[in-house]
Length: 170
Image 1 (cartoon, helix red, strand yellow):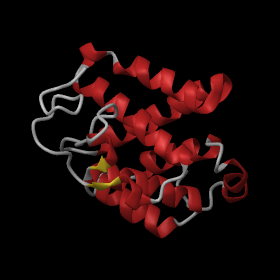
Image 2 (cartoon, one colour; image 1 turned 135 degrees about the horizontal axis):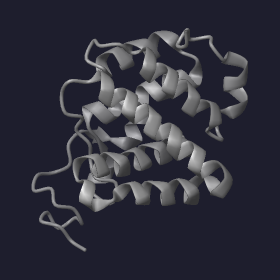
Image 3 (spheres, rainbow, N blue to C red; image 1 turned 60 degrees about the vertical axis):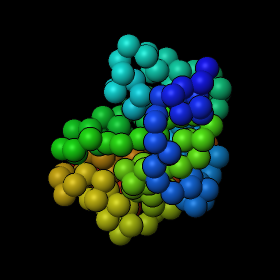
């Protein structure tokens, strides 16, 4: 189905942001971004029931055993972010071939924070999350990110050795 812009979505302007490729995300991290976008769509347009697509995608990407837990933890991160931010979280649609190749500034901060948590880079994780959360409490977001990173396939071995290193949990 083609939307108003001819790219399969309803956006009338070009996609916002820089290229997803510029973030150098792993396959798992790209999957997290795509699933997060489905959840964002569901928040913005509940009638879309895009949360069901998010669940299906995590199962397709991460398998029937790990997928539901990963979806739950992605949602936990997003809910923590939603609780901390006061302004609207701008996102690009997951299913538009053109728009999905770019990240908004909010998506960029979210993913850079998640990458920093996965690498154990406390300084970058705190800075990106503080900016993402607009100066509000970052502890719930960092804690949720640590829980997500803990079960992502490409990060699982590294996080077990770093658990709590970032001081994200009380």
